[in-house]
Length: 476
Image: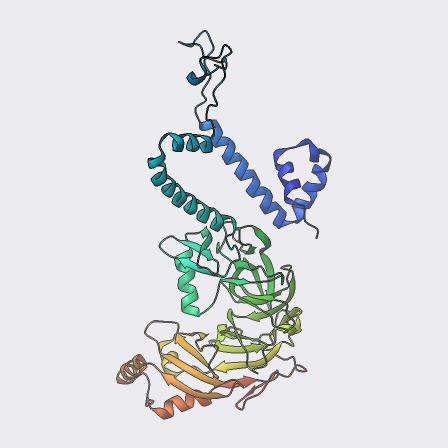
């Protein structure tokens, strides 16, 4: 879709005669294009506010000659230099009018004072020049962002640590809390177009007032260069119908194909089980969707150390929720194979083709403590750093009094070890004392959890490590 330039849209908002013949065509375009429609709304609000401000100001009226106490003097009065008074014809003196002329005149009459004053003037000019130079030649290329909780705003900085602009929003504290809790990103900075200029990507505000959310790209001057808005959708999964109001989750921006072109993948959820991972190209057009039943959070990891990132999803498989059979899952995807609309091989039911993007799909076992407490496990969170040679996942209980385990995998997704938190010992001892469980919390207990990890091969669950085979399409 070809967008209308901002100048034409501004003339349209102002009702200018230059675009009178184009108004019907512009109206038709705005009904289809959310990006241009957003710009028109912004311009309309700006001019409405400006008009209201002008109308609110007191209007001063110049006094007429009859009302004035003294009539204004409008003639030019000649000034004569007294040193030329002997001449019959008066000679007009050169009256200083500009700042430099006044300075020159003052220096001639006060040579001593002017030396000190000149130094102060030079210092002042230097400060002004320095400020002007920094302002005119300021680096406006975004380098990173900060979520300023006290000021409730997203702040954008350049590489010199100078703030370029702010995006105020009251949800900043809760957004930062989500980022820290789930180790995800709702903003990012990257050169999407490969022109050496970074853009700031964000899903804040989150969510928007009308129930949908937007993914925006801003330049260094806070101008929206790209925008993508989600709309409500009707979705069927097996025999269930959902009216889904979607919102964005975690964002990842990277060169997944190793071809120098940045792409975006974003989690898109509804607060219920229908969920998908969207892959966007450089124009914010959706290249593909990976549908899953049960929300996930995306992370990126270079599993093969080949410079190309894989996407690791952590969430919950909720296909068997009605039968208390939902579980924590970990999936590994090849982002370059997220094309078209396709669904996870372990959550079939959307009526789509099986995704070929899956490399691994893993099931995390439920401990006897979780089963006894009657609480579901919370989604796994990838907590390892990029430099680590292992993948560490924190798997917490959905309730505060539940257990907290850490599952450690090699980069070829072999389960290597399960670690526990000190609170797990107390929880287990309490439940055992109450007679609700009979197990012993020791190394064997942790070993059984590790051995309880299962791998989906596209048809059935395997105890040994297995990759997803894409010639199988049955449900688990």
